[in-house]
Length: 120
Image 1 (cartoon, rainbow, N blue to C red):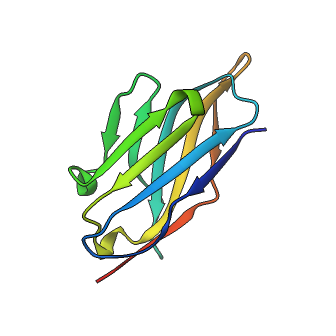
Image 2 (cartoon, rainbow, N blue to C red):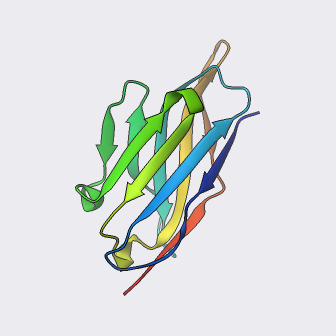
């Protein structure tokens, strides 16, 4: 069984920075993509940023230029560096991975979520 463990959330003032980490452990053969999603109160869960095994990245428009996703393949860990945080970035941030296990492809797993609160 695969688990994702997130860390790094917290309370920060507007304009500040936080770094989220997500470590994958368990029965992983290889990871295809790792992503960060977020869900604000009363809203749906949306993709924030993603990174492929080859290092290609994607960002939602609202975080381009402020957030950076990176990955340590050897450690099966993904990071989200968040700069110039704004109150509208307040949400629970979830890590997500798409991975392979033996002959089974494109399995998915979610982390438990970490709360990011940005005060004005």
